[in-house]
Image 1 (cartoon, rainbow, N blue to C red):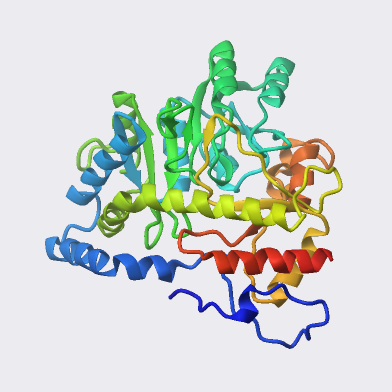
Image 2: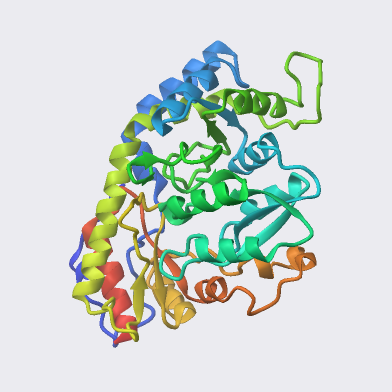
Length: 402
């Protein structure tokens, strides 16, 4: 349901307002609004699966795989149980073995690195670009030139928040050092780099359809795209206990097959994705304008808020709209007290996570990732977000810094 527009929701809050005042909620994400648009289609799709009694893999999954492959510009796609499983499938199929190492960013969701460990390899965590917070090609190159005792097999760039990493520079590095590129596109379905969609920019690309994503299931689901048909066939075996045919197991795989109901729901949503992504881009442009008009996001070094930079080569799909904010934690509490949803993606960089202590990183080793973790804040972002709601968010931020 669309949030009612009232005078109190659009007017700039005053510093003298009582903390006890009730504020209309503006959620970080509202899935209910999207569901109301497609409810009948979704229910019909679920009924179709229930009537077929084919709940794991099968025709719905195979059809979705073809549709996602075509959308991404890849030759094949392999459905699986989650985005985390997709990462593991892609890494193993790309030849990552125990004792190898894989270079990735320290500023990402945990699965980007944990999937490397699950494949038996060692994560090599590298710092990010200060303006986009995507993997820094300069830092990657420096780390590779430094050498080490582990064989680096692959490069895993993350298209953070819906914006492609610098694939020109990263592909050149991969070519120079003979590495496979596996794209972590969990947050970026529909994004592009120089007009080419993610999913077609490396040896393989992985997607998450977690319920919060731009293309979301009603549970866990994931996908790998590739233009290497042998790679695709290998991943189909790996997702099904390493079995090319029933009860014959050629290697150790995993049980990470996609549910047919999730595939059917995703097939309903996929035709809407480009419109939804365009609406996200419009909401991001509105935030840019409102923040600038409020004097919050100027180019001055001491500006209290700094939106992240969008590369001119990137088609950004804004899974999240993220700012860097002075006094971030205080600002987040101020917004929360006024019923405005926010989130921190991510409060602890991967190189400082306790479970990765064995890698030997310490505070100060990757300063841009650490600085980002202290400053980033995601504001409400979803296609159905209204401009009055965005004005309320920005006015409340302005009130905090006034």
